[in-house]
Length: 401
Image 1 (tube, rainbow, N blue to C red):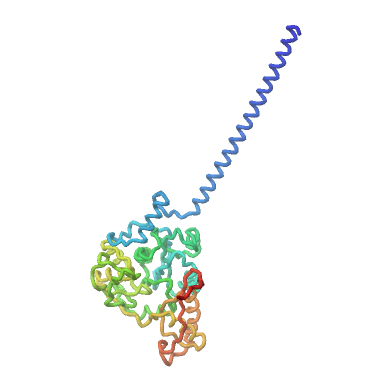
Image 2 (cartoon, one colour; image 1 turned 180 degrees about the vertical axis):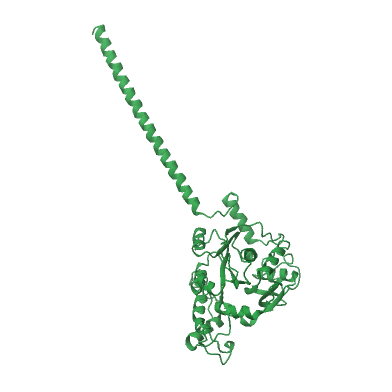
């Protein structure tokens, strides 16, 4: 092979090598661009998903705190007495507040503040089915449900509760955790909201969601009170000479540190009571300088009310203490068209009783029922029903020794 031939072969090899390198480079560029496009697409998708997820969550937390640490803090608040703290109602925020509920309406007879647990969707539904917001407006009433937060609730979620509030416009929710010893927060939150956003209402009716009320007869009840509108007043089922329970095993156990007197001042049951926006505002103001106490009706309508020298009006004759009386009323109306002696009573764990009762007494409210010959407490025969809550029964065999 001569020199010329070798040069030709070398040049040819160089050309092929250049073409190969160019091709490889081109392929690498294509692959790089493709890789960049894939990464960019994934990143955009991830950001979109995160945005959509975050947009569905309520902006509950003002500060970004480690979730485990925050939940532990909430659990500690729920489990321990807050006797060393002052009730600082200003240092909380509303998750939902529906501030337009009473806006622009000066003819409101009463605003109902219904203390309700976060997960009691069925109970709230029964109350709405009995009287919708429009039905209540015809009676010059308004209604809101008072809720806290329950991140670990098994039966509903914050998103569901937010959707419920959006749909019905009747939820007032604070950023405190739902717990028995936090009921005072919920109670005072309701009074604070009503005195600020529904101050034009003549009355505030505070009630629990497990209480049955003859709504149409509430107007007559309010008219019969003749309470002075410009004085501190509360009407309800008055409890007198009640003593703190000092037995540690009892649910209502109160330490001397929490409350050091031997008796509570007179207070009214938190089941149902009537007050005014002015009185509510005064109670909220006073709560800011008083030691926290977790039994809410005793604290609000007793301890605080006593300092304000609030006058209590007794409407205990309208209350049924036992749910069996409400069941008997319902049965007597359906079978005999007999009037019910009571306007207010517990539902006994029957979440639908509010609807059933008001649906039945609508006949009596039209004056189509007969007077009783004997009082209900002498004629009521009802089976005792024990609610098992949302748990399941378990049957087991045990050996008898």
